[in-house]
Image (cartoon, rainbow, N blue to C red; front, side, top):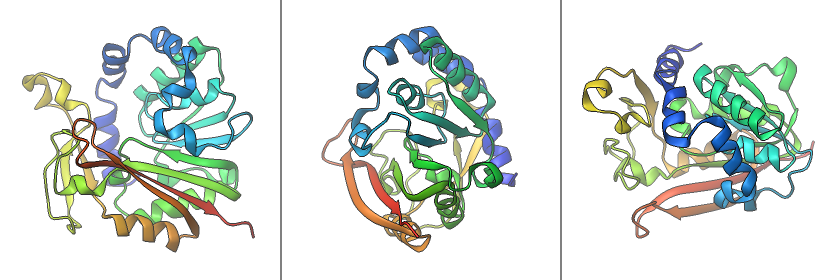
Length: 253
């Protein structure tokens, strides 16, 4: 495992299960919410799926299962890949409470077992700000291409690169040059919900933020045919960009 992945793993296993319980409720409560309207829980991402039933989905950095469990309820065959054992615990307990199967692999995404998963998935789906955890985006996109079947789809949603220069999502992240390639040490995503005394002792993550062109060109360079690129407003200020979704296809041979 890469040095930065080891550090990021420490951050994402720092009381993460307790955090999800506090902010999402016990797994049984979260499962009940997912079962009520699973498609609504997918939010804007639902439109990027042509179907759900029996579709093999790799949910990359799927965290506590916020999207994986609703996808499984809708009939998808979901495998979450994530670095945190605490995240796995919450997600699998939620899936059990919802009465759906969920495969969860705790690993460094760049080290996914290709003996098992090469050409396995119909869709590779990610959202919620994950690309910056990978310091070589080509290495990441190469892995996404490898795990997809010919004709498979990547649904890559993330924080908009505009957030490099403007904290439009109010995550407390530093503003830097849009074209910076620096590796930053930042707080994990939910550190801001803790009191200062706890917050200052929480492990930090090492991240590399990308530009729009770096993301799109990496997808193209690693074999994807880009089909769609959508931009979405920030959560609290609709005048500023907050998220994007890039949709690509692994062409059939």
